[in-house]
Length: 229
Ligand SMILES: Nc1ncnc2c1ncn2[C@@H]1O[C@H](COP(=O)(O)OP(=O)(O)OP(=O)(O)O)[C@@H](O)[C@H]1O
Image 1 (tube, rainbow, N blue to C red):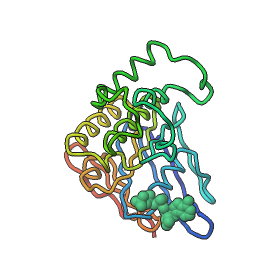
Image 2 (image 1 turned 135 degrees about the horizontal axis):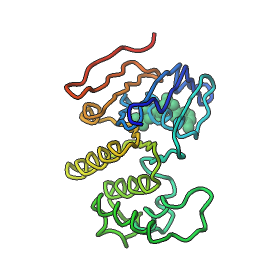
Image 3 (image 1 turned 180 degrees about the vertical axis):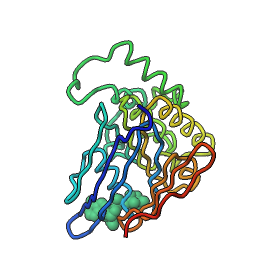
């Protein structure tokens, strides 16, 4: 099903009180692609992720999300992260509890998924450490593993590599590529130009509006169209 439109947004506007965070945004995202949301501080990237995650309700416009599962969203730094006494392994395991299965016990298959992801993101040696005691980059890899553990077909990431060193970025790039190759659609907000260049589609926001979209073909990335008024 790769290449099918999985998200269609039409004329989406979102306001925080009098602040217009998204202004008449239209966007189509295909399944199995890596999409970068780029733009300066306050341009609307996190708000757009919140809309895609169905956490925020647009004031105007429509959002059609043809995913089979609930989207997985990974925030930069959840507010609870300094309070909850969770180990890295427990933190990743949270991704295996669906909304209605909070009190079920994890089975062997769940534990294997958690272990594999910790190995893949090279945090397995930190499994027993407290999440709140980790460095920023180690926390980001743990939260990404938690998002991937949900095995959603739509993964939404808010600046997943902002605290990572070069080796960590390479690991995450590879893991995200594997995820899209397996059919997962990944949308990530980023300030890094190289993330945008490596993505299949790059969506640039400024003051809540989409000002440019570019897509990458196998041969090269081509600027397709300046968007909107
Ligand atoms: N909870 C909120 N209450 C009021 N205004 C908000 C709130 N969250 C965001 N905004 C405003 O909405 C606009 C878009 O913010 P958003 O966080 O989506 O931008 P961003 O591109 O993710 O920024 P950054 O790169 O700094 O993370 C900004 O003007 C911001 O001040």
